[in-house]
Image (cartoon, rainbow, N blue to C red; front, side, top):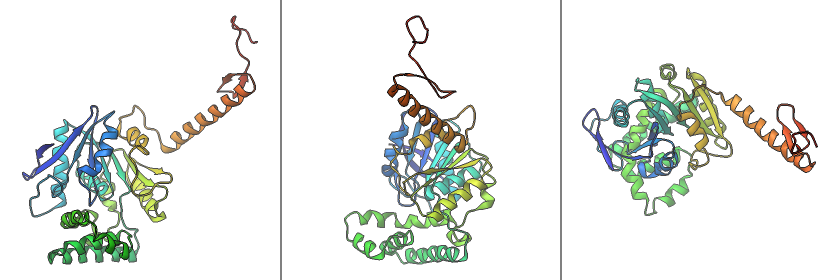
Length: 316
């Protein structure tokens, strides 16, 4: 474990993996660096990965009063520790914190936002987000950490009966420990100030090439939010992880992260990548057909099966 001092002197704990272009991993509301370590290890083959505990979590310190700007400064300190411009990957509310960092002008080379959980821009959803933020603040002011954690779990869609059973599990103590920091993420999301909706004014300030990832099995509103975020960014695009939901095994989507985090000489759109993959699959099928017909040579540009060459190079 290593530490770096943030702008207000708070000690931020991190670990470093691999060699290559630097990448900072930003976890979500209930996450510490142990939970993002598998992703860090997966990316370490081609990147220098900085995996850290957000302030108030794990081994990192915390200095009141809280402000989103302090967490942006934490990311800035880690980018400096990495040696200059770095790509940033954020998951869930961590994706929104990463967006704040890029909008504040930090030297972010590339940005990946994995399912930023903004509320749809409808009155009912805005009201629900504001109610959650206000209730969470009141519960924590009374020191009811368990109730705060339970409120978070039910708000993100978990049935109340299931949450009640979870409160009896040994690991629930960890949820109660991180519960006060849920208020930090509520501030990041703008639950009270904006009803948790997309900060359109912030999107326009981010010129960094950005990939917004969504799970294909996630609710339709989540995919729509991801599309709206990507469309609102000057250099944004949407990637859909087919068959996946909010939490994705690192190995499954590494091709998205690697292609988006590694600098490329020319930008490829999602559409051109799809066309290229489709053409590769088509050529592979045609090669197999040629082999079955006893004419193993294949001319990709014309889609022709050719006879095997003789030793003299003539057609046989």
